[in-house]
Image: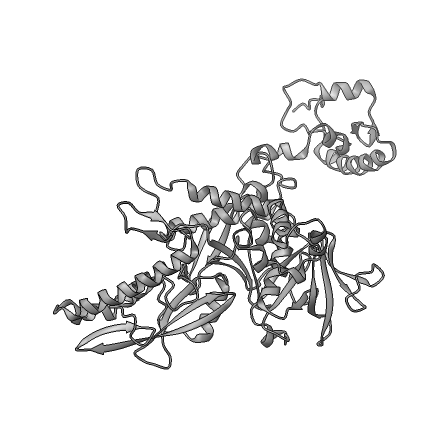
Length: 552
């Protein structure tokens, strides 16, 4: 038996294993010292010729021949990224790693922008009765778009009074989102695991600052520029209207109660709201810069209504509001709590805060709202109109053609004549024998109407009307708590809620309803409401907007 000598390409496996271990250890040490790339064999550095022979050898390599290891991994990683060596498979958990750190998902496959900017988000919106609906929106979806989606899904009567309300339940704070605000950005400021939510609700006072008279919104005593206006020959209403149309606001001043951070005592200071921020005077009503103390940055804060001021914050009055900085995510620390003397002053402060923060954008939102009302909603059919729209005018049909009564005094006299004619017509109708008058339908038909709210308390009525806007003509009808057979018409006038008792009466076996001891009689509550939508009657104003809510 003859033994063949080992060829040059054959190596002893035992010696190879020992030499390989030494080779790897020495390779990393030499690489750290010199940074050079070399291929080692039998623990000795290879010359250039040997290295070339080893690396460019014949393709017919035997299975027993070892593979030479690259000594320097640093250079190889610089030449070719490690991520490209991994297989390109879908990432089953993309939310667990960012695109920049993911070894599988590349930025090219994600497209421009980050996932938070271009992806979809889920927004949950609640209604007044506690029902909710989840919507899938993008990062650029505004509050106006969400309201339009909910109106379409719930088949509610479309108008621009629907709004989204941001509610902090544990803080008893809420505010109405402006039409241009992004719901995703607002939701991102909420604390994780908190009880913050969006509520879908009517807000008739959203653009009342552009509709109502300037005197009712900005009292003359609270506008500091009214003194200069008298010298220029401009009235109070003219100067306020000028600043409203330009998207700015005059300087607002007046007394407010302030609760400082970490203290339980409310103090009364003289405040001034300017473009640069909110200030209060440390010396009476002085506006000297030495006596003005900076309080709040307008651009970095939001203003909220305080819904339970006396219970949670021990406010001196019921007209409290709060300024919450953006950096305050949870807890009462950092909140600026204020309290005004009446509802008019609180409305003035909050309207001025909105104008100072959003400026001309707020007026553009109002113009877009007016433009949407003029556009037809459905093609081929007449656009639906809400009874809340101020489209009812006094008409005179005594001649051959009808005409609009523009004189207020003439319109009032016509309303009184209409009321007298209505009484005579009602009495004459009751005198005619008919079986429809004894039908029980007239006693329950009002329960199908959106303005009827059934068994709700006086306190809940006040809260509901305040939430949907203290605008003249906002009303609802409810069951009376004192009289089991009676009803109550709750109406807002001059930012105050008034209640009128509706009593049923029976005469000659016929049932009718009245609010003025039988002088004006109505067969049912629907007839009563429709009459007072056209005629004021004994009420201080006509019925314009009814409080309503939808189930999501």
